[in-house]
Amino acid sequence: MIVYFNDRFMPKEDVRISPDDRGFVFGDGVYEVVRAYEGRLFRMESHLRRMARSLRELRIRGPDLDQIEDVAQELLRRNELEHGDAKLYVQITRGVAPRRHTFPDPATPPTVYATASPFQPYHEQWERGVKITLMPDIRWARCDIKAVALLPNLLASQQAKERGAYEAVFVRDGAITEGSHTNFCAVFGGELVTYPKCHYILAGIMREVVLELCAELGIPVRESPVLEGELRDADELMVTGTTSEVMPVVQVDGWTVGDGKPGPVTRKLQRAFRELTQG
Ligand code: PLP
Image (cartoon, rainbow, N blue to C red):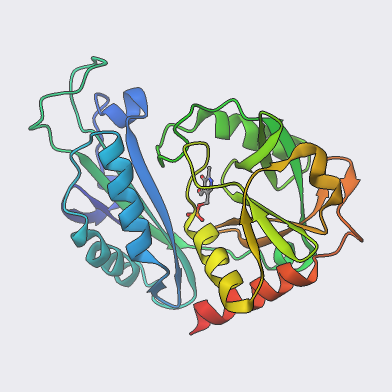
């Protein structure tokens, strides 16, 4: 596998990352995951814009992000991933410096690492729907930053796996915020409701795409919190993300959503999204 590491393409096994890298020591870095469909990177500009914002919010002096799109295309090419399904991973950390909580010298170069790898689509889950499990949102109050420090998400994700669920979905102050690696939407009487964009959720690229598709398809949208107590009144639930796409939710812990099958709004969004990625 050929990867990109600090300005160079190289075999993955040749990458050497310092134990003093702040990504290793503190989780002091940001990342993005981008899907490629038949060699086309989906919404790359939006991912790079979000990455620039994450870097800015953490005051990390990143590299020139304009170059990342070329790097990504080159990674797809060098790894023979220009056809079929692939995903790109990009990570930038605050670089290598002696362990100290305060920031290193501003001249410290960031560590930049990127890979492209094959992606196995979730065809069966998209078709049948998945189970989610609810969990208290114990994360910090800057979930809008796509930081590599993901401990609460990892704990939640593992617990979801142990409960036989596809995703852990967080509840904060009685409201559903988002999943451990997805955003969350509910449909009530034909209206799609999702948590508003703020520091308690990541502004998902797929969330944005879903809202755009709703506008095109004439599906009304309300960006406001769904309370845990309202969930059972929802006609449809879904989680969305770059790799999850539009994932129907048919079970929440011990109970079934509607008739246990993905609903019509979810299906419409899935079809419209498929057209986007095939276009
Ligand atoms: N929320 C969290 C916490 C995530 O980690 C992710 C993606 O990894 C998402 C939402 C979905 O974001 P996107 O649609 O950009 O993949």
